[in-house]
Length: 158
Image (cartoon, rainbow, N blue to C red):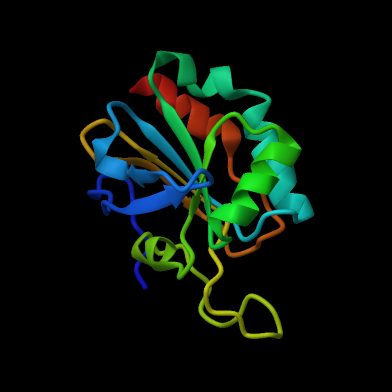
């Protein structure tokens, strides 16, 4: 599995939101922040999603930036997770981890002793309006957070 880098074309995908609405990456009008996370209702993931949610304006959502969280949870779990945390951005279900795999952001049977093979690594990508990756960070340690400041700096430079 190859991790994507800055300058690569972002793989297009369609996934369903927590509202079971289709979301297609390259149909978005402006930059998109993709935040892959291992699982809803876990402490580090919740801290990450809340940190982004509490600072959404700094990510440029008022200027046309789209922020989405992506996990392998079902849309129904993501809907409840979004409601409980009052998240103001969509969460996408990558149930089989196909999207995570296409971004080089999927664990290969080594996430837990249970040998789960459909869990996304905590990762962050910024895709510009032309579908080019401008920021890429894939973390092997699920206990770490993405570099939020670097993501915001990348967005500000677009």
